Image (cartoon, rainbow, N blue to C red; front, side):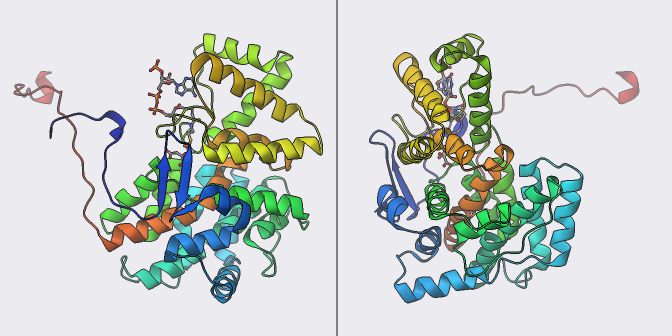
Length: 377
Ligand SMILES: CC(=O)SCCNC(=O)CCNC(=O)[C@H](O)C(C)(C)COP(=O)(O)OP(=O)(O)OC[C@H]1O[C@@H](n2cnc3c(N)ncnc32)[C@H](O)[C@@H]1OP(=O)(O)O
Ligand SMILES: O=C([O-])CC(=O)C(=O)O
């Protein structure tokens, strides 16, 4: 048993967690006991972050206090703006910029010298990271386009303020609610790869900023959060090809392509988050142009019938964000802006019951080779 190899750690239990539960056969996701459907439709992102960090839904006063405390942390230090400007001038890839930003926020954090496992200090650090990452992302995105950053507003919700900082325009209710729902849907998801990397980092008793920086790097890959950008690029390819979506995806599979936004390590059916996001994508299409939703449905139907593959969260977030006018290459950074809430919650759990995470590999290399000095090789 001890020598059984589980490539990709599939199905391996490595921790106990009270944060999120996924039933991959039923297509069910819950955060701390509450179904994702209820949370997505009725709770704000701030409420969900409170739930994840504190273990229960906030009462009205608690929520107001928590939201206020987070909104007062939105502004960035001048040094952070300089860094963001430098990254934009260097045309840094957005997720690489996010990784650098997450790391650098530590330099300005008043709790940076606290014991790494100090829960109260970590809640404050987590609040600052969650509040400031959207500000930095919006500034980065604008600076790349030659526009100046827009200062955060404390009177707007987390979701509405991000769209305001991105576009220099207050979003309407539909946009703000859609974005808030997307943030709720992306906030946590068990021991996904980026969360696990945050836990591995925390398990060495490295600090929260190190754990979050690891997580951002891990989220960026195309098998994980990076897939949402790939989905939109695929939908644009479909559009430009002039082919039916079904035909396009059939040809792509023939060429050996993996279809971004499909398949999942845990779900054997449609991801419940994709179900909710597809409704949003459709509603935005009905108010504008249905083609992005229609291409998506065509691909979903084809892959379901021919390959038994179902969409994951990244599939319908792409057409939703596109129809909201969000630049395609910040879709994955937006995932990080939401998931930071979940990463912080898992790191807090890890510190509370820590043991160094250190699996092992089966050695399949050579043994007992004779060493030859370099000049004789
Ligand atoms: C937020 C998130 O991270 S959600 C996931 C986002 N990532 C993506 O959407 C990228 C596309 N999807 C994938 O690459 C995979 O489904 C993953 C990485 C998500 C899951 O990977 P795993 O659990 O390791 O499954 P694995 O890669 O072994 O795939 C199992 C089988 O399904 C096939 N398959 C899985 N996903 C896809 C896909 N998107 N397109 C085509 N075939 C696929 C594989 O080719 C494989 O078939 P085989 O056994 O005949 O070789
Ligand atoms: O759980 C996973 O492996 C990937 C995922 O859907 C997420 O992180 O939201």
